[in-house]
Amino acid sequence: MLPSEIAVHPVDYLDRLGTIFARFTTQDSGNFSYGVETADTRYFVKTAGDPSDPTPYLDFDDRVALLRTAVELARSVQHPALPTLHAVIESAAGPMLVYEWRDGELLGPPATRERFRVLPADEILTVLDTLYELHARLDEAGWVEGDFYDGAMMYDFGTRRLTVMDLDTYVRGPYRNTMGRMFGSERFMAPEQLALGAPIDSRTTAYVMARAALVLLPDPPAPLREVLVEATTTRFPSYSAFYDRWLTASATTSAC
Image 1 (cartoon, one colour):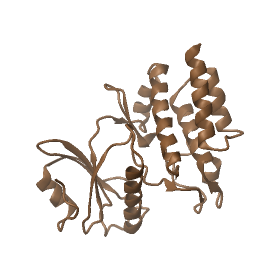
Image 2 (cartoon, rainbow, N blue to C red):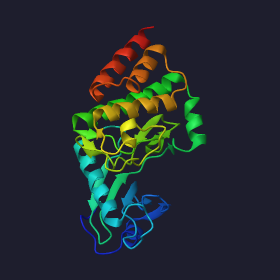
Image 3 (cartoon, rainbow, N blue to C red):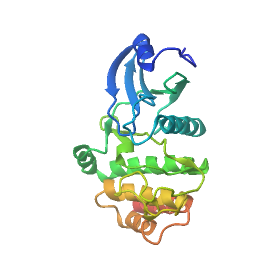
Image 4 (cartoon, rainbow, N blue to C red):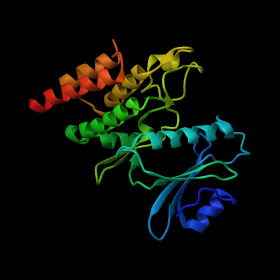
């Protein structure tokens, strides 16, 4: 049974809990994450990092706020692509988010992304279907896309399982761009994510998801390509409209 609060530093607690077999402490966000193995299982543990470190682009309070968003999202939507959140442990260094450990490779690095792109089209389409179904559930729960790109996707090439992570920047409900150029990869970003004051809503989610397909699927079947092009040019009025059209086009493709 994991505690709800600890009085020691997160790393000290994790050393007592089990063996730290992986450390992710060079993230631009300033978050520190760990892979921990106990006698029974493995965990992925995400923390807000060093409270006294002034170098990350987000200060400690902002990093804590994003972790709290991650907790809210995990508790509002369950989906096979999302790792299970087992516990939130409060500490003097902020909350520790304890997830199930998942194997796989991040699709952000070019070599891994290219390895994914040469998979059979049916396998890639299955991954996209999973990604889009996940975002349909997120959309139903009111979540709007934040900083999503291929580095938020992990793929296990052996088991063919997609894992989606780091959705801390998603927002509950429509919002406004207060930054100008928002955080993210421009390969995925919608125009409004580059325009100060622009509305960010489920149309943005549709655009970004369509860009994900155009990046990861080299040659979409014609009916699907039409949907993706519309999503990134004339645009759909909502994510649900995009998703409905994707499902219809997928059925047409499967019937051919």
